[in-house]
Length: 373
Image (cartoon, rainbow, N blue to C red; front, side, top):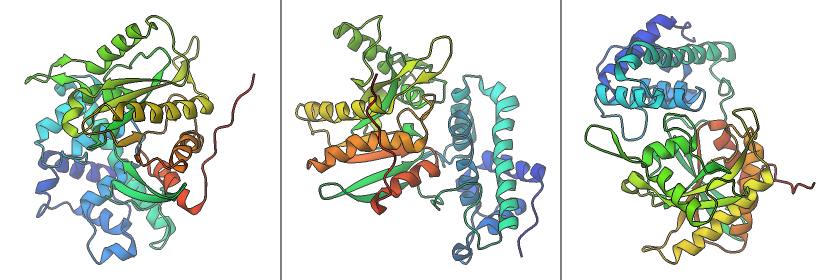
């Protein structure tokens, strides 16, 4: 019999306790409401092995809106890669930096909002399981049961068998990928570091900080300015599909060596939104591979791996399947000609990751169509 839907306040109280003690100290702690919820939503095949509070929290957090909210929840609870043993104060400080507020203000305001949302989705998961029954599919539009897994490999046929790696975590947690592709606007102007976009996350991760946490160097911003000056584009827009290469700043310690800024977003006059054409995404990805081949020959060791987000699917407004179709058109063409690059995709939702996983089954994402006019 399914457990009754838990009380939101009781769940929130226990989530705050998890934030305080951290994941590495969960064993032996009494968290009856979270434990009951974890048992309730666990799949039949996993119940015998024991449902864990950590798996429940990861699942609830994965359902939050992508961006600052989800990332702050991941850092607050130690769910972000490499943070499970961080002290509570360090996790809170990192989460506060995402919103650009002081630690004290975050503690009094933002933290309750973030953890409250996690509690809300825990309650929804249990309620959905009650409605659907223990044997029902994943609730709340969940596409694929990733559980606590953050990486998968997908084999595709494109001029031979190729392997893609799919990452399901924030882009700034990437490790040991030579090149990360970052979406950019045609003015190559980076968003503020506290924003929630891929470009902002990479700018934040690349920043060089002193012992007090203050930013001493903002390499992506500075190198893009130098790139524009060197190519005579300072003060004006570049053509959509242009790719500018920079170093990776502090991300070199994570094994990320280069950042390729793909200019695909054209600002819409009088708004904060952008216009993105799928054909420009495809053109930019093709340019990424050309630049990768050019730079690889001058690098020691050679560049071999590259990671793509779903370009244009944020403020550019492209649906996931349209963005992936535009990216995949260039990736497939590159692989079909025999290129041996190690290709990665980084996603923030299981819905998006599931689209890549469907490629081997012959279910192709929508391809970009050339535009005329």
